Length: 384
Image: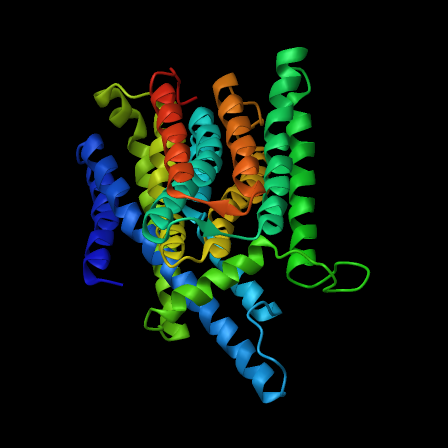
């Protein structure tokens, strides 16, 4: 990783200092936001290095036992899970801090924006750059279809409470949201048991589809092939320090989002659904694009769709349950968010059907995201 990324991450620290020193609110927001981009990239690199360390240790153990070395062992998949989870730490921190201050609109928009951004913008950018460099690219349609089904399930849990409110009334919507959050977390735990610990029923390994956790592990391995490995202890220290830095930078963002949006005339809804996900998803963006350019489309799709799934089935329900301690958060989104979420799932489903992608499909996904972002810009919204 180049040195200027480390220097740019210092903007986070400067923004935090400015937040406590009473600097201009708009300046603090810009400093914290700009610093979050390289900080998220460093955070992603640190988790990748830890995952590589876990995978390497597992592979060495296999070779020592005379077994065939496999990249999708339990150790590698735990590393993939670590990489997928910490890739969404900025969104989780921003959501929790927004809830703490009662910024419900911002928290909801961050959830929807992260799902939409990863499944449309990140994936579209990966397909576009990979297609320009390699031409038509092939991937496993069954694996991608598995992701599409899981994404549809996750988005359904985000949409159903909204449809309930639209068709009847708002009474009981919080209880429905809590039940949906609990079910999503249960599904997430079951998915981890299925994908990491091999609780698949029947004859294990017979006709089994690869999961996004395994593809995260594959992605980490691919990235590790062309980067100089960090010592595991150093990776853990970097992960801890940058995580703390991202937390305080997120706090500075939340403290200043009100004055910043008022000074530019932007709505908090637009900041939450477009600006924050773009800042927080830098690690996924760079990884997915890099893998697509190396013609590793299964891993690239796993990173992009896996991050959307992670936000929907882990971050969103966690925020709902955490909100019960203060400002309750329901899974009720406005019609535009619902429409775009549904479009993203449908388009992802069609993209995954034929097992082949090209730069035009990527450009169309990016165009869809740009159109949605333009609409989001003109949607009014309040912080609370």
